[in-house]
Length: 378
Ligand SMILES: [Zn+2]
Ligand SMILES: [Zn+2]
Image (tube, rainbow, N blue to C red):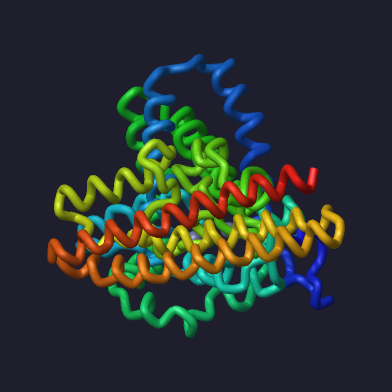
């Protein structure tokens, strides 16, 4: 695992020039919110409707990024009808993070070239860069849509791109102002449900690129810096299981287990039940187990370095034998699972259960051996 972090491009090229409007919004915004919100509350007092509106807008716009921008548009991890797509792309626009196609273009490059100079939010350049400095610099590839032809053909995505400015002004300023008019608190709504809310959604999303590449565990892969953390998932609408996401980006879930906090996954699941969403992609269990097996093998074989030559040779043979047996059985299970996914044939499903059980025995043996290797190395 390479954890070295440097605060510059590895290829020596210079970053694009500053985008001053982004600097003003993203650096000035949090400062303005920190000063003006307390000032407003001291001068005019609080009102429950300010906080209720801010919370509702925070939730809907943040979910717009997760359910719409990220999982529907960037990864196409499920399909939806146009009503659902329009709704979540307007909601995502309220988060003021650029149009869905620009967002997705950068995001796809992040996945494709993660942790390199071609990754717009390369986590190896340090926390601050991946968190928000990357947004402050001009990036000539951001609006080159030649690599996302599927999105340029999508009418709803292109409509949202053309009307992005109108959408965010309407949802992040005019809507709070109109609601404020009803309780005679136009400025309060603009400050709390508009500005403060937008700052919080920004910082939450930014944490997926920074914090989710720094804190947490790597149960699926150590090939990149992404990590799983339930803490990060709490304020990123479920995107904190980022190691899983980088390993299986087409999966509509980030939190795999039912109890993993992932409101994005729950919303898409409910959308399917209500007829708005379809074709939800789930990674097959044996395909997931392949990554777990590779990950554990990496861990177990690392114990060998701490052993003397004789013990090392002995443990290596035993680990290699059980690993090979596990891989072989996993192959058989995967093949049957792929066939069974497309069929309701009972015989096929019985054979699938048998293949899974076969693998399970080898898997338990491999894990026990791994624990033994760790003890022997200690
Ligand atoms: Zn990432
Ligand atoms: Zn992603």
